[in-house]
Length: 411
Ligand code: CTP
Image (cartoon, rainbow, N blue to C red):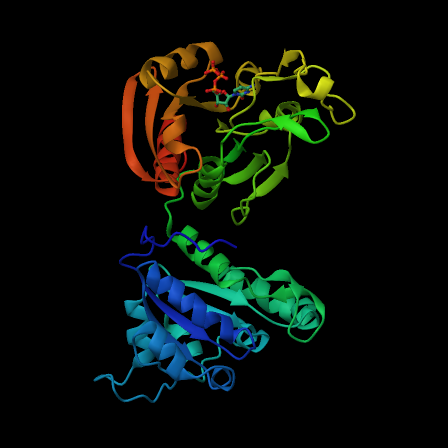
């Protein structure tokens, strides 16, 4: 997974208690604390006695920049009530790893050491409880754990994972803790405003690839980064998101359903049946307008020593955005205009030619492959610039604009 972009300081001003309970996944929490602090959060680590068998307080202190707390009898706080002070100061308690035993304790309101005391004492309206379970698959599947998990969710805890995969015990299955970068993404998402809660959002991203023969094709320089950022931002804002991606090698944003396609026709076929079930369609993909009419079934070879260039006819691809906008139950459609010049004029023309309420203009050569961009939003009311920033920041601004256009809940 790519190193997440932490220069955005997504967690600036947030104070987190990171609680470690007993489990081999403790070693990953060293990295998590580093990522959280790099993202701008201040972190106070609390460890149970079991956690201290797996990783030392020295490591966690060095990474968080604060002495680790591990006892309810710690007398350094003047009032001698660390569980109250910790839970009043924090925006969230992130328990990672959360053991089966700790979930059982939470489910029953047990509070016999500092971390469980702090969880029980938290004022739930301004201190969230985020749990990152980590355990063997049989322990995760056990009816007792299932009951306890249901209980703690009903009591207001938020589960981050777990996921399926290789386990430290050598078995494979559910119960593996999310990776540190995934946990960071989840914590950042948790704090984003939920402007699209309950909405369904469909996004296209990346280039398309139109085969000429089995080894060559027509494509373009789109990296897919803007579309992936839009999908992530929409999911952070509470939407259920489907991402139809052309051929790109980008990690799927957490919680987003991804459908991989190669050609414009495949993108069209994936989008059209799904579009009416969505509230919003954001077409960021750089769809090839043309494709070779009859791709060669075998590699085209040089004839006459290469003097004769091969000739092939092109045929037009379906216009996905315009087709979605024409549907009887069309979602709110957002088009992207990648131009090389006259951005405002071309973007405004596309409002009409595509029949959509919002077009986002950007200069192709200034955005393809880059991590930042600058956008021009064009709608019936006028134009608004979103100045140059990283693509996720811009995507979050765009999501807020879309939510405002939709009105109603969450906007
Ligand atoms: N688009 C689409 N299907 C196509 C072509 C474009 O869905 N076959 C969408 C893009 O995803 C984008 C918008 O239409 O949201 C505009 O794409 P762009 O390539 O800039 O415009 P074109 O319609 O191709 O016009 P031109 O190439 O002349 O600028």
